[in-house]
Image 1 (tube, rainbow, N blue to C red):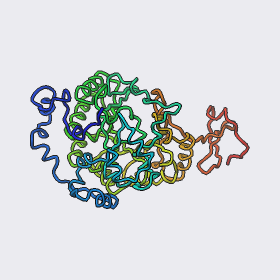
Image 2 (image 1 turned 135 degrees about the vertical axis):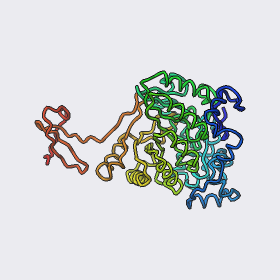
Image 3 (image 1 turned 90 degrees about the vertical axis):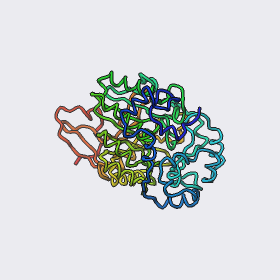
Image 4 (image 1 turned 120 degrees about the vertical axis):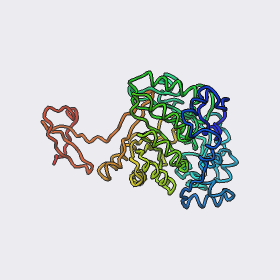
Length: 443
């Protein structure tokens, strides 16, 4: 299977991959519903020059590797998508690759291709294979090793899909997979089995969307829809506008979220046109995928500011990764930076046991250790919930350090962030009864 071409992300919905004219059928209905966005003049309007700030990392990288590109091209998200680093030759032009990286790139077949936007590659260690962001996007041989407990679909998404591309795991929520396309491909991706591919059960075309929308409309318990993929913000404005409009028209859908890494890896995508779409369908909440403080650039700051100013509440979901961000000081810097950009750190995920991801996973106690180092030592808003998304489709389970020491009569004994013991009068309570009180005297 081939990776989606960059042009695919710009197409409006169609009944199949060959219908492009829009003269009849669902495509005509789509254009009739949004007449101001249709017709030959629409692309020209959508592509009008939009200035975007440029950080020092981007400036140096562009000067070195994309000298012939104009500033207008660099600021165009479509240009960034078209000029991603995807082949061994393109990667070797930029990175000093190790033989392990080179061989891993040569071996690749099928889903989860290599793809790195120039603006994101500018943040990576070009000569350092251990640099955190480079490790998350340049393949290594370890991703071809299958370890115990790993699976291609460890969260059981496919088994919880009543129709292709729609996951219904929780009673009142569904996950709507709108596309298989990402502007960059994280090597630890939960959906590594399907991203970057066209065909099969995951065609992500108009007909599949219609089946998912029909299921949601016929299931009144569904009040919350999370649009993900792939990355839904790689869809063109018209296509995203159409999908959000259809969801908004379903009376029992109260809450729509978008999961995306685009503001981090393709920040130029946050255009006036996209913001107009999001405003039109408010409230839209957005979960952003941040990994490391190096991602807190001039460009991502601008993207977050634009979204927040448009009235989009922003949260961050960070995956805990060995040798990348498994350090309390690193994550504290990230979370503080996110708060300054009006992004609330929401989840810290234990890395899912995707096939070939063992080199990214930490022991669970590392996550507990990090939360213990954050709780009480920084703002509560800067402390995300540490969760494991349980294998087999059991859903997210939050994990916390154990602050309950035991009981003394009617008092619950608690240990605070400093390690000191305190009493809380809790008559008739059961929590802590099975625990030993220990030898330390409570304050």
